[in-house]
Length: 439
Image (tube, rainbow, N blue to C red):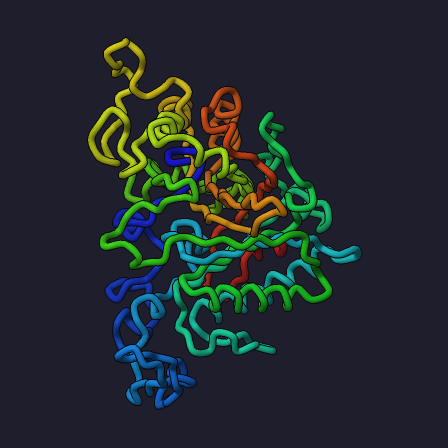
């Protein structure tokens, strides 16, 4: 999980990547609010001048305290806006958000290319509006009318079955061939795959749900819901400095994630113009896995045993061979008994790109918790999301190696899986997938 199999960093390097706009970013729409600055009259509706009451306490006596009459501008959290239109779709290199929804749809019987194009046109229009902090064009629920864009992103992808249903089999990329079976898989077919995939992320839970509900309603008669999963991450500002996030095992999760500043980042993550069907230029392939963590078993291990499973210190994510989180792992170092300091089956050792022919993925997951069973066992883990230019050179070789001897395997279970082709971003005036559906 910490290195190659399970997560993405949300820290200074992630923030430097493309995705969210900052006040000095030329991609910010003219007149858009800067973080910490005032907000528009439209976005103040429902908050400006409001004198609602909030429950409070003073001196041990409970009472009601009036809210300040003056309007408080949106914080940077609410004002951050990600552009819908661009070279790549949003939600890939955007820093990880605090709340997310993953949704898959199947086209209904009788729905084909025409209906799919109309659906993507509706979805793109709605995503653009919501990402700008505007209401949906029709039947808006007002769930997030008080909020700004809150770093909302909406990302669309196509599954293997989409191409047969729309008569576009000849345009289906070879890279979208079904993933091979792995011995650790315990996959639920009802929660796997799908014709269409939607990823929603936001730093505000209501903004994320608002987008989910709007897109689900706009699926209309063309598509029906196949599965839906909800996830979360640490909230921005929850730590005293930007840090790589932790997963539900308590491990720093996202070390050695490829960074947009690296010279070979685009080659590893995005499809080049000459690397596949022309409609996939600047797109990417996403593997989605619901990975349940067997937390009761994991939490019985002492910290030292947990660190040996991962190959990194639990406290700060540094390799067992010393240094800090960014220090290179010394795979040759041995202890006084001559044993490797980083065990040969440690997750971080096995999943390293230099141990897998350079295979790399951009991991950008969410944690999830879907309650407890009758015995109090948590259904919790990771919604693993990884991006790459070719899954046969990214996810597949790494997962095959992990499948053969990862020390982490006894503590996780892969319960759902999907692979989707995510086309490049829509230009102004286009909808996502237009070059495929109208090409």
